[in-house]
Length: 229
Image 1 (tube, one colour):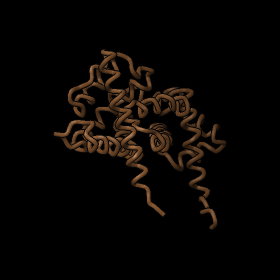
Image 2: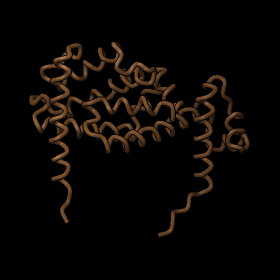
Image 3: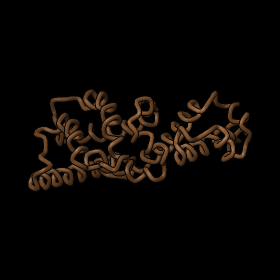
C-alpha cells in the first residue's frame, strides 16, 4: 500500500505551526513577530500571511497544534497504564511532558481564559477525558466508587473545572502541592464515599490497597475481554 501524499501546502502549514510554537515558546507572544516565525520556517513573511491573518491568529493555531500533539502523547501513554486517573498517572504524564511542549505548558500555566477555553473545547482533550471516564465507570462497576451517581454525569461538568483549575497548577510545578490537593479534593469528593483522608498514613495505606485490588480486577477484566482465536 502506498503512503498517501501530503500536499505541499499542508507541509508548509505544519512547518509554520511547528516553527511558530518554538519561537513563541522561546520569545513569548509580545516579543515574537511574524518575521521571526517566517525566518525560522525559512519562508517569506507573505508566505506566513497566506495562511494566517496576523500574529494572534498564528499564536492560537500554533498553540492548538502543540496541545494536540501533547494530548495525543498523553492518550497513547494512558492506554498502557493501570488506573491513571485514580493513581495520579494522568496528571504526572502531563507534568512529565511539559518540557517537550513548552508553548502548551506555559500558555496553560498562564491561566489565560482564552487559552483554557480553547484547550477545553479541543477534540484531543475530549479524547483524553473519555479515557478517564471509561476508567472511572469500570472502577464503579467493580464497586470501588460511589454507587449512587452516574460517573459520566458527574465527570462531564468536572472536565472544565479540572482543566481550568488543576492543569495550570500541574504546569506551574504544583502537582501534589497543598494547593493542588485542596482543589483536587473537590473532584475526589464527588466520586469517593467516604472521601479518603490524604493527611492520614492509615487512610493512604487503605486507599493504596483498594487501588491495588481494583487494578487486579481491571487487569483480569482486560484479559477476559480480549478476543479469543
